[in-house]
Amino acid sequence: MSSLSPARDDLRIEPGFPVVISPRAGVTLTLEEATPALRPVVDDCLERAGGVRFTGFAVPSIDAFQRFAASFGEPLIGYEFASTPRSQVEGAVYTSTEYPPHRSIPLHNEQAYTREWPMRIWFHCALAARAGGATPIADSRAIYRALDPALVRRFAERELLYVRNFGQGLDLPWQQVFGSADRAKVEGYCAARGIECEWRTGDDGEQLLRTRERCQAVARHPRTGDDVWFNQAHLFHLSALDDDMQDALVDAVGLENVPRNVYYGDGAPLEAEALAQIRAVLEQQRVVFPWLDGDVLMLDNMLSAHARDPFEGPRKVVVAMAQSYTPARAPQRAVMAR
Ligand SMILES: [Fe+2]
Image (cartoon, rainbow, N blue to C red):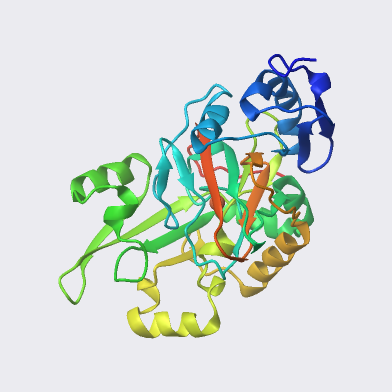
């Protein structure tokens, strides 16, 4: 067989979550060479399995990864209204969150704290960490089913209100998050997305921005019809921080000014027991595999959540996203039936 025109027979396909695709023994392929053979396999299994891992293919550059992600037919999208610091690597490829290496990032669906999110997300491990640094994943349909139905119903009906306070030296400055220092542009961006903006002046004269955005807690996949747990309440809630940090923040700026927090859609507090149950279910659903240099992981961002484990030493995992999606909302706040 020729590596220039690979066929499905050149691939080894292992079902599971994620599906793992690699070149068959004795076959050498770059990911780009394999793309024509991979496409139908991915089309067939991505929305059933939720995620596909490509391993054993050569990915010679970040640019090659970007071309691979773009080859699925949708332009890659930028990273707006960021939650955590990232830097742009090349084109529309970003580093996976630049968050301190010793900390883990809990499972989450990308941009589930907004009403517009990418349907597809790719990760590429250009350099695996010496220790740790996995990108655990979890099945968002299984999370939905594993949670107490009464909790799911309550969150679905009441929705969530994400409150963010930018700047104050505590969280990302709004100028960085919105990519503009022009207040009118920020207001325009927010108004178009139903995000409420509130400006205030800090003690040192700094212009501070608070945003409030009401969003879904669950969602329904537009093509598969699956119900998924789809929010970042467990990440945005103050209780995501260590107890010492929670106390220090509230002492320093007051509860209403902490960098991020989340409430029910009507502003009522989330119950500690609900958050504990959500975190426990997420923990049970974690699927972990070690990164190998050159690996690519492609997820349906509604069907699969991802996380980041702590790591030691250098690590380079970059990310690309595509297929922006905003669900239609009923005039009355959408209520998802189970
Ligand atoms: Fe993420």
